[in-house]
Length: 146
Image (cartoon, rainbow, N blue to C red; front, top):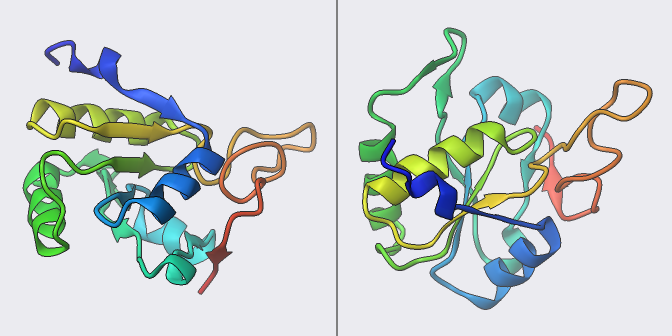
């Protein structure tokens, strides 16, 4: 990578929620796998009139990085009215894949890419469970499970 990754900031989930509410062009981009979306749940942005952008960073079940990720996401962002200046918040389970995805999009020219600190589920607690200590679910932000 070209060093852009160092510029990707970690934004706490509460601040992400507030910025998604206040900025109509901001987007939440969930880069987890289809299996995670189905079995773990998704951020529910309905009360602010939005839906998360769902695009796998690593394709399930191979876990290989999608070579078309930048094109697919760029196309979807354009379809939703986002541009190179829009605030883009990337989320995964705990913040690793989303950081990588945000870095790649920053390298592609998107100027305001952010990593959602602690992701959707956050780190494991003492009982080896996620979603209890930090992250979207632990902060009791709106989410739904199919």
